[in-house]
Length: 345
Length: 273
Image 1 (tube, rainbow over the protein chains, first blue to last red):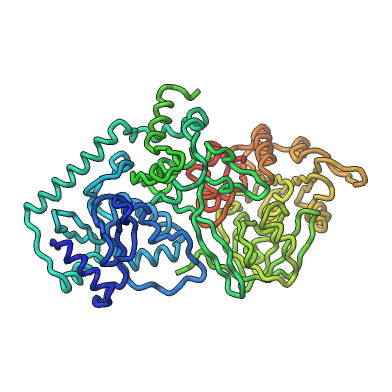
Image 2: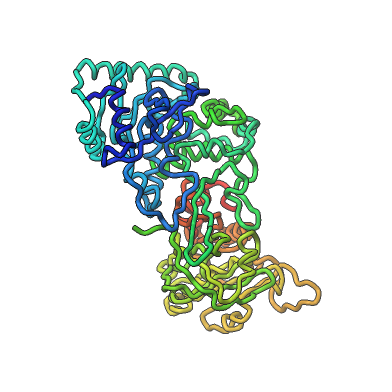
């Protein structure tokens, strides 16, 4: 099935105007006048510039499901169904980590589960790449093969639509009854495949020198040799973890005032000194480079052993957000190369 | 759906000042709380915060719960201002427990120091409730000085118990205080032990440095790595494996622990810090 971009946006407009019963809130990547190449998930507004394809947003998709500040006790009534459109493959893969961590084990985070259930996630193939994009280094591609309810693949000013779940099928049924769609041809499918292959090659070629994907186990072998120099400009601000699509470490604030207990969840960061510190002051990682190293081990080793998924999906946001100008890919290269050259005793 | 952040309200019905820095809150939860000894609870002080503590009562007691807490940080400052009648919250229980079935028929050694005696008292009282199942119980307890010793009222009874060997050591005896038991770090008590470790279990809980050297001494004596049970002290913030603060490599202290056989975690980084 295919739809013209203007018809899809027209459908979104009808949704927010209350003309479509099923969906009342639409979130899309929007570019700002002063930053035409940066996209931020915002409520759909017909006046603003909606960029469904190109590359990932500044903020990770997780902020729409696992928010920086949310009251987890008591839990608010279920929100209405919403649509989040324009999610990229790296973010969709990250949601698999969050699903495993927050709903896949012995406990379920109540709010995350509700947001997941009450959201139709529309993915979109990347048609461009940011400087920091490196999904192909961590087993990903700039288009999703799963993890979406509906996926969009751009061909000129039209999108090929694919459903990836029952929720997605339902969405397409509603869409068809409100907007003009048409069947896609075999040549359209071929163009989608060609575009995907070209984008994949583009991300691969710019990262080829940095590929250490067979050496992540080596990160652990260096305890304190190259990590201090690699983290020299790190100021421990925690931007990298807050903006990471798979980081979900939390702090819990007790905001009880009356009889009803109130608990508010927020983001924590393993880069902060107080993170693992226990009462009395002891900390397993008192030095900055130890906390810096912890993030890499968590992404490549700990999450892998916890969920059998890498904690890095190659979005490159940590590199983009770093105040110390630290490139995540180059750190992995530097440490693993150091181990290979026998710097470690 | 069960909300893992939900709390069971509880009332403090008594406060026992164990030592200048350690006190026991005696709590009556609104509904009984079943736990297995070794597991921990998250204690909420309304409007202040939440922290993990291990009950100090036998797990056969479910209508009330004692929690022994040392004044050592932000949250515990407020614990030491709490008074009888105050309302608090409990979440839990969380984590692994002592494998009592593996202790049956064995000579069990319990080694504890300072506030590490809190979870060990729960274990000890649980064992005493079914004492015939165990061959013998040796409980070695350490403290900084005589006035820092906890559970002063219960100790005379424990010493007289026919199936129990209870010994204590203090690091120092300041002028003006009296002490007729051992002086030195708690591991000095290991020197006079009779018998063969063989396949017998040992349980260790205390400050990190005490756990470390206590474990090493037990290994030297011949205790097996898989028979030494440690209660790991990490920042178990959420209690159910979500917040990752207590992660030790691939393990969560809150979910896979806090009770670990030493053999399981000996190769993880920074376990003693």
